[in-house]
Amino acid sequence: MKRIEEFDMIKGILIIYVVVYHCAILVGTLGLWGILDKMIIAMMASAMLAFIMISGFVYRPKEEPAVREIIQRIKSLLLPYYIYCIPILVGFFIVYVLVEGRSLGWYADGLISILGQVQGTHFFSDVPPIHEMFYSAWPCWYIFQLAVAYIIFIPVQRLLKGKPRYMQILSALLLLALGAILYMLDLQGLNGQDFPMTTKIFILPNNFGFAGVLTIGKCLSEYKAAELTSLKAYAKIPAIVISLSLLIVLYLSDDYFYLLPLAKWGAFGVYSYFITPICGLALFFLLYMLCNRLKYIDCIGKLLGFFGKNSAQSQILCDG
Image 1: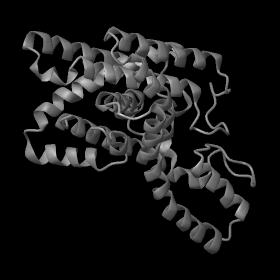
Image 2 (image 1 turned 90 degrees about the horizontal axis):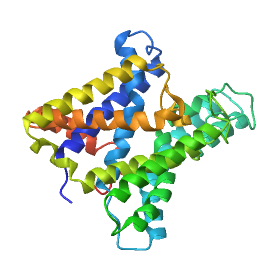
Image 3 (image 1 turned 180 degrees about the horizontal axis):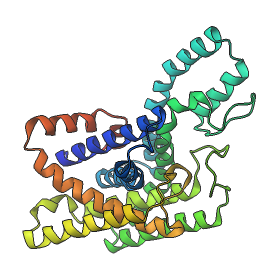
């Protein structure tokens, strides 16, 4: 499959967006920017789903058993993360244990939080809701949840092989509905919780919901949505207006409280499992149109493409 330049640029834009969001949280400036601040929070869930849609778009099944493909996919996602963790954990041991004299129990809690993506750890020490060490791994939650989503998504794609295209759409809706039902049932007691002591790997509504978003991306691929730029002006302009309108409505109606890692997809409860993917599609479309223009500005196109290709997210898009 020919690499789609616009996709790398979209990833670059979204990566910058996500970095700004997390940096603003860490330095304590998120909440001080007025309208911009609300926009960053309101659009974050849609931005993450747009990432996942691109992953589904570029997915191509391998000519090997499904189990082997799943293992390879998980390996490609998690191995870079754990390699990244090695120097981080060594550095934390030196600074926190050897220099500052913190207890081994405190360090063990931090180790567990990073290796297992456990948001709240209180096994061996009395620590705040989020362990200090966990901030270094906090933004990587999506890698683990996406890995589990692939365990669902890949067998579904094998079952759909040779089936009519509308089956992809039905499968996407079914997986999103399963995510919404699991959110409603709240089997893990996550709803309304900010810092539950749970691993972010197995967030059941997200595992099935993200598999649905991957399937939406696969639907776009099969319907050749990458040829969006070939749309005539009479179709392109209304599509841009509709997409902008959807995002404006999302912004105005949002509760400005982002908690996608714990299965909160938006301000509308179970309905957000259908509303937010639509907004993710709208964001994807607008960014695609924008990047199709920006790529002709050499310095901007190369810069955004560089960020898109050389980030952790590019590990996800290994088929791109």
